[in-house]
Length: 134
Picture 1: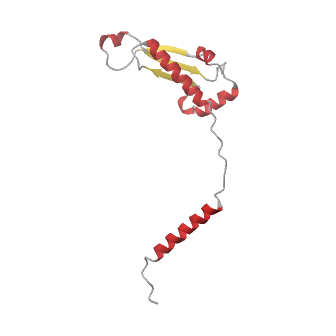
Picture 2: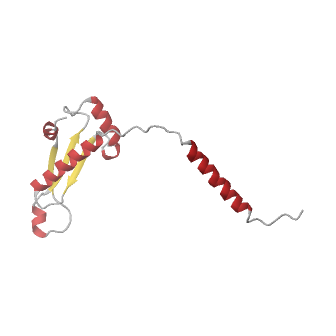
Picture 3: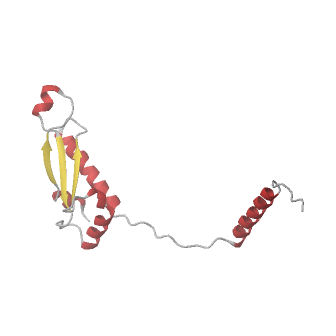
């Protein structure tokens, strides 16, 4: 996967940033909206797309489009850079496959230790009971 070609598939839209800022904020569109169409991506192969669909399911729209917003900076160019970095990080973590867990058995000594502790606790609790006077 080439990140250079992947960034060419991104679409950007500049929006007016919310919040305070006076007259200047009402004129300048510094907030960036980044959109990436996962299904129509040419750079990703089908297995990568399936993996991303599964791992990023909660971040995608119904049309499988990833949308990111960035309004951290007052500069549109800086916000664009931040959004691209965030996007690449999301894709990188989304493509990571989790390690398969190997099933293991507890050792005989650990089983014996656990049963001994249970027996000791049981005896301790039995000793707290009132004695039977039969």
